[in-house]
Image (spheres, rainbow, N blue to C red):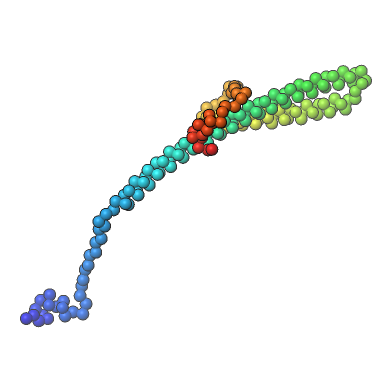
Length: 175
């Protein structure tokens, strides 16, 4: 028989507190769904990145097209303003001749001069807009735009059949 002083094992039975250590381990038997889900998430991320890259290309195309057509429009406006300035300068010359003949007053020439000055200011403003638009187009395309831009798109007189447009609908994700 054992007594309290006989050994270490016997002394642990009579103590009030016993030192205990326990280890718990959990090992799931099947983790396949988690791995399948992780693979699905990775595929979705790849597809998302691909679609984002494609959308960025589309937006860049739209921005370049807008900048290009904007330059064409502002350059056309500049031609109109130059034509108006030339017409006003001719009018001023006519008025000065009419003043010498006594058929017009000096105030008419001054009014025409004021209009020419106003047009010159507008022309400077439009030229600044053209420079800014060309800088934007250069930024978007990655190269300096110095050459004259041309709109040579031939628009058909009659539109194509509806089926033609519907067939190309899948190529336009924005629609």
